[in-house]
Length: 240
Picture 1 (tube, rainbow, N blue to C red):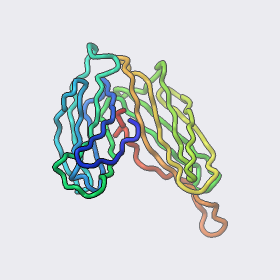
Picture 2 (cartoon, helix red, strand yellow):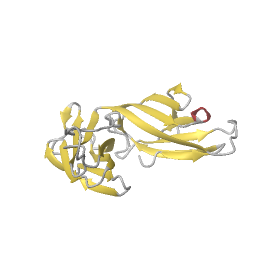
Picture 3 (tube, rainbow, N blue to C red):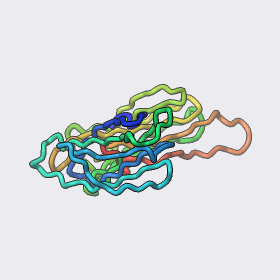
Picture 4 (cartoon, helix red, strand yellow):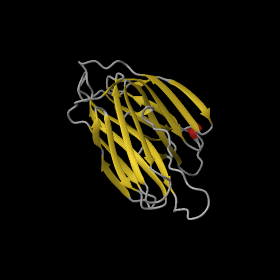
């Protein structure tokens, strides 16, 4: 899923395509907004039908919807079924005089799981950044899969965006390395694409992780090597 955020005025809506496959069982849509109470989130199926799910407003700024997905069989379109996440602001909601900003995460309970991490050999500038991806399907490493690709979109502290292709080190395990030359936060957006084992359907799995590097310390206590991470989102795996 690309750029899952936006701004809505009264009676406006935005739609985001979401491609699911036979490994996905349940979908959780989490919408974040300062005015989440004014927004509605729906999952619309390939024939325009709305998939019902429980609405749970965990706090004023969050809307959560959990939806049990129908089983996808071999008779369904190979490239579908295609769903859309629709975020809307009904006409009857109060007019704040401005648009309501939001962002959201679509997380699937799935038998196709991605674990990804960005780590560093130490916290200082000049450390080696290491990127690791492990992909499993039905509990087993994904192996010998034609078209399987893993990359990381690395955002540097100065905002520069760099794409690194990760190399397969062992079945289902991809790795990459990069030297961190600036102090600050490096944010790694992992993207893995390929096709499922049983029905050969296209899939996309994503995860986020980050590492912070500091200017070298010349005095004071030693800085021990370590890592800094945020939790990944697609397993929570982002279904996209």
